[in-house]
Length: 507
Image (cartoon, rainbow, N blue to C red; front, side, top):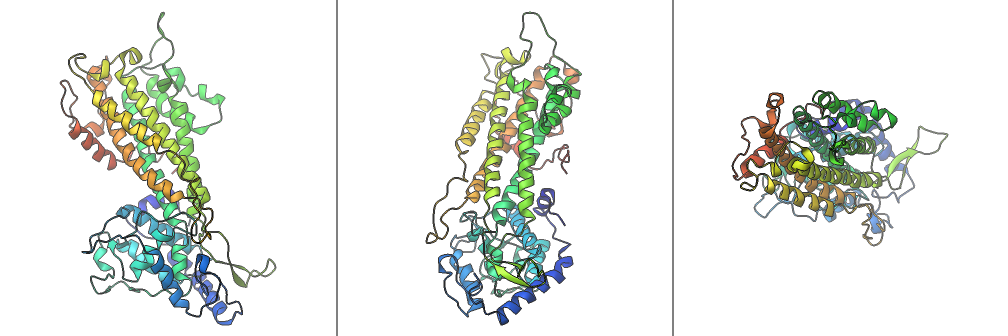
């Protein structure tokens, strides 16, 4: 099975991995290999099995189970429950689901030596929607997403909490660590706690979730343009498919293919004495939005490559190139999320360009000298009523905020852990920032959507204005009034709307 972002996004809502049982024989064989190494190998300095962690990995210790619990306990330093048991400072339920799913899938690929029974427990938690509470902070995206991921085994021990419809099924301190779920509460065996924590699944899963969330917002943007261009004329040549054959990029061709059939039916005509090209925020829509689409596609590939990789340390490898039947543990940096960290910054940059374009296109809609159809600030009575001036101000604020936040996180390395982690990629810093950006993008799209809706009040050819489900039951603004209810309504609708274009073309 190959885990696509669309699969991961589905798992944020419900479901589990039906393919896990197909991996049972391989995973149990690898576990027997690990146990054989532990019982017969002369090597007593395997990282994280015989030794402590990070700078403590210098001496052998026979307390193999104790070492695993030590790893969990020393990492669980971020409060996720108040003293009365109320959850706080943690991922949303959907985000936590994708993190658990990503960690389970990565380990199911083999090579870690984790017990199949432990992965079965995680799969049952997904199916029952009983998801460990996972904190937001603490990962440097190297040595694994240590602090956030450590709360998965802490919950399995019955020493944390759960979210979701089945949250009461899990063992917790408040219920005396009681659970009817097979295998819970859980006791870590050698190598298991480190396998659960020492991976990139927090950074990778959150980035994948954000790509899918923003991708939907992006495609809803295109749908809003399609709605607008049914009645608002622009020069169509900028969207002509033949024009875009002169370049190799896919994105501009894709955007043009969605918009040209509409703009060509109601074209803006050249008139002597008037500008014969639209401003860049209109004319360059295929290039601007097309480049964002290409970035999303490229980021998607990187995230899927990491999702479909084992991220752990140490991992099983053949004892030699000649003998592929015997295995040993090898230490390295398979927990290092560099590519994903770069990709997280790229997503933020792509979203920042989208914000800038939306803000500029709003200005186009509100400036009659540019759009040649709609009144100043989309006001029904300019000079008396301010129209959508307030929405323009909020758009500028949101755009400036996102642009300020666009400093790359992947260059913010700070040495830590007794200088063991002397250079780290900090991708988790970027994905936490991206969460804020996606939330702001939802609000900006609501503002953009209402502005498009308001233009219908002034359309020269009202017979071309089509019904758009997003605006059902809403009213345009003829006299100034508070728009807070309309914007919040659109925010909620957008959050619960899947673009009709979402399956085009990569799924």
